[in-house]
Amino acid sequence: MKIGFIGLGIMGSRMAANLQKAGYSLVVYNRTREKAEALVAGGATWADSPAALAGQVEIVFTMLASPAAVREAALGKDGFLSHLAPSRLWVDCSTVNPSFSREMAQQARAVGVRFLDAPVTGSKGPAGLGKLVFWVGGEFDDLEACRPFLACMGNKIVHAGCQGMGASLKMVINQLLGTVMAAFAEGLVLGESLGLSRVVLFDSILGGPAAAPFLALKRERIETGNFEQADFPLRWLQKDLHLATVSAYETGAAMPLTNVAKEIYRLAIRDGDGDKDFSAIYDYLVHNTTFSRTVKNTPSSRMTPRISAGAMTVRMPLDETFRLDPINQIFAGVSRRSFLKSAAAAAANSVRSGSRRFSNRRPPLSDSSCRN
Image: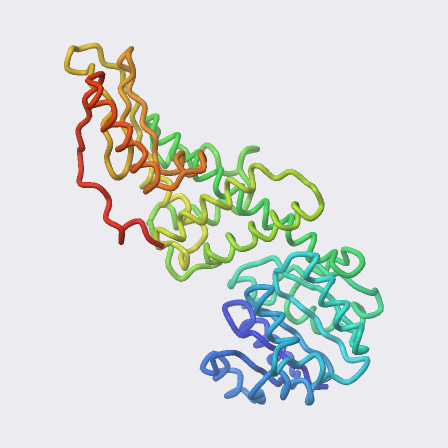
């Protein structure tokens, strides 16, 4: 039997390699051919397009980055779906929203192709070791026909229900993964702002009831500050959180925490952290947080609000100093640039009225620094 595999990124390349190690004959396609060279050197056949791949195989696995990429591979100009013979099986291992997965199932059904949604849990390490978890939606008989192949790539297979249920379960899991990581990172930042050492925080929290087990795997990255060579890139987790919120919108579920977490990850991407491991959300938070709340009663402290590029210091009548960091600005629905422009306008009006005095601590942001 020949197996087609489309999508040879961090996960797909390792999954395909495990099928090859098990003795299966592969036909492979990837948008950039160089990612397929190791598999081709091991005996896999290269296909010039998804359509060309479909005519040579009995089962197709897709492991792609987004719904748009899956749609293009399946239904695009050189898509594989219309070129698969009836009764062939398509197994989509991509992380996509459930409604999209059900749409692909309908498209497959229309041309007589069977369909399973089978997204995975596990990063590049488990993928290489063949220890992924598969969350499968679809007909039980189709799962049984596919089980020997899944067993080469994973050590746990869960039949979640009908088509779309595998994708649904994966949405829940990655929603928790993203929000828990962000909450843990925020907790570390809080602890450090209160004077606790990072060692004490890790030793006290990890392994206890407040910490998910996977967080222990992120300790070394956070302690060393090495977020490169990502196990799971931050930008893809942000994508998954977005898909979770899309799914919630479709079903009417409220997701306030997930929406906030999604935007924090988006800010980290804009700050250049998209290709880093998703635990880099800690690094983003710690470098965009002000650790001070001071109370001053000297005459010199009775100054009016002062604006800077990174934060705004507002001295209230009782001389309590509060700092509004960029994250809080975004939560309020205001971009950093808009926030600064509005605050500067308010400052000018106050100066003209003679009621308050403002001074700029730093030059205003340039247009280029506000882009992205």
